[in-house]
Image (cartoon, rainbow, N blue to C red; front, top):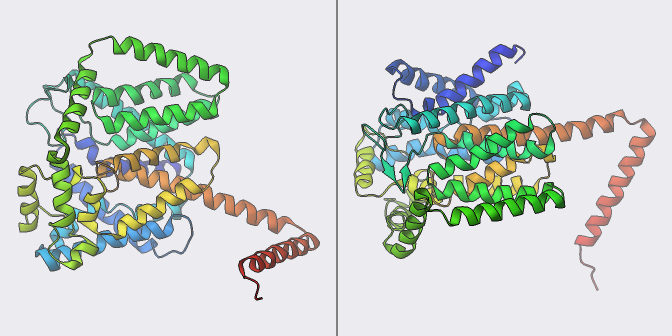
Length: 430
């Protein structure tokens, strides 16, 4: 896309509607209608572009798209949910075709980073405002009616779109050690990247952040800085440990409650039910059940289960299995293998850190498919794919720049290595 401003307008709009405007309660109904219409157009265009061939992440993304499309028809065949309702409820989650739009228009990585930063700042400002004004609910996931109240020792606000916070935290961590520019900004974002999860009193947000920080600084800073950082962390932990901070006490109480509950924990019960009893036929056990629209009997059944405490988004990877079957699980295994086996430049390590959040969160949450994480997952995967394709293009260009004699030598070397490999793989006949 040659027009820079048009590109930014597209990406900003795409991100805003994908995140459902951070579930803002003050927007008129027009924004809801516009969101569904915009996403329908974008997904349709993306589907038309998804027939391209390619390596890297092209195949697993296609599998994710296939699983979601099939689930619409499966919900009709096995649960009687009308196809238009299946499409309507699935469209906001069927964002993966935008991956192919990004590849088609070749969005610069720097542009993606700027868009993520813009929405990262919006997340931080929105969260802090909501925290300071808990009685004026402007951003609501449906968890409260009229005001946010104290839970786990703090006004606990699970702010929508946390995938944005994870991605800017990972970016800040990487750029702090790989770039000499804007270091104060990256430090502030890193601090907020840990403070905000603590304020939300959510263990699945806090633990991966701490692990990423420990890994990154143990690998990418000098021994002198390591000693300083470890000393500061030890002193801080001792100081905090002696304080009676309500949020930490709340987290500890919740952890003890989870351990004591064991198999009585509602998440364990829900996971067992959706893994073994929910699917009505063998087809559902393979292709999933699809998402349920509230205007269908199937959607009302899922709502009824939720009233009993059986929530699909709370059961991790089993949730995506219940909705879409085994195909997306295979796809995410492929994505994980590629992410952590392919080497990328250190300045883009934030992509791998971001997906650590995603895979860690998938143990107990909906990070593989929910709108809170989808657009940032697509951006991160697109960045990784672009790095791989740029690397391939550079190699091809280098080969093309060789003269005829050097090309012939290279061909002979490759042919020799190929023959040698084949000989090693074929056992000798006695």
